[in-house]
Amino acid sequence: MEKKLTTSLSEADLKLIEAAKQAALTAYAPYSQFHVGAAVLLSDGRIVKGSNQENKAYGSCVCAERVALLYATANYATTPPVSIAICAMQNNTYMVQPVTPCGECRQVLMEMQTRFQTPIRVVMYGTEHSLVATDASLLLPASF
Ligand code: THU
Image (cartoon, rainbow, N blue to C red):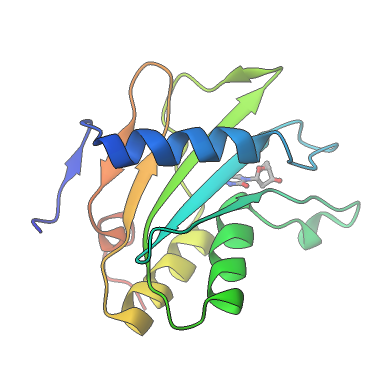
């Protein structure tokens, strides 16, 4: 599969976005009020969801992407993640622009791609348009 950034969504992307939207409803974000949902599709078709989980000690907050990705590998250790959809809500409204993962989550995505030798498609949802990276390495050039 060609590595590229695109705005076109597949049927599978749309289904994964719906799961990410459900996940955003479970966010615990009393400090930022930024409710993020992530859904990870595994190679066996299973979908694993995560949402951001905040803490009074801000450094202990965990992003939705890492909650979903790390739950997936902790529970299905031999099943590669193949794509992830990310969305976020503020004041009960989805973000207009695509929600992109933070640097730490990009590093975790890269580790998983390398570990499973399988590219991870990253679907970043926005109501106006979404952005898709067909390979997580596009989001972290010259990575460690
Ligand atoms: N957050 C995520 O969960 N994913 C992102 O891609 C961006 C940021 C969370 C972390 C924190 O709980 C809140 O959003 C504000 O940064």
